[in-house]
Length: 283
Image 1 (cartoon, one colour):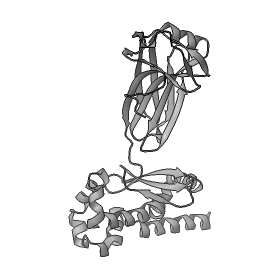
Image 2: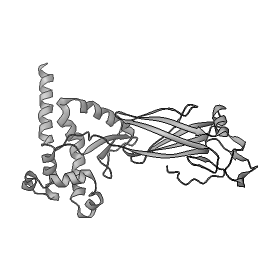
Image 3: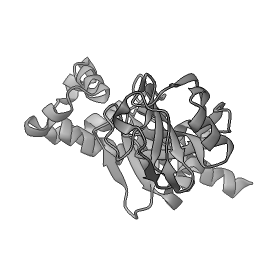
Image 4: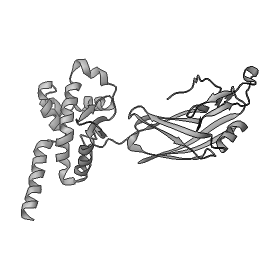
């Protein structure tokens, strides 16, 4: 949400005052790990607005949104405008925007403030619950993620759950997203933790995904759409390797190319399953 230009039926307090006398500033500290932590400190200089907050009629508010994951959440802050916002980093990827506001917590009839011009002298406004009273700007930051799925010299995929029943792939991101139904996602996490099932995990989830990715990669019509992506550049480099050239970089050889990328997971996963069966048999 970008609010650099705001058109509302009433004046709002901005960072530089604008139409209302005073100042509203926000300072944000940031830590990104498994949790993304925003430490927010707000500075407000406007008596009418301060009284509204003290009386519980208005509140400091931070809107956090991420277009890559469609995450969006609003956070109220204490009366002094300072506090921490904690978000599980799995919900964030690439550019995240934090928009800092003062909003009405209830309907405010006959709202009046000290204005910088006589245009609004003597005027009052009806402000409804949830409407913006102050805007101190938007900060954006990047949340990068380690690529979770093993591959040749790194990984190509990251997993995400969704409410649907089908497995879906999203090429328009770095890394490529494999979207799983919620139950599949929970089962996948259990499998992924087991070293004995590592190559089974690749065969079940990664190998089928890469078959489709390679078909898109080798398509002249569709490949150009993604050639700015890191995964596309990584595949381009891989296909230049001697082992891939010996196989033959062509649509006909996609299954063999993908098996080579992941060190022949189908055969190895069968060996791993056989070992597990043997352990169960002799235990």
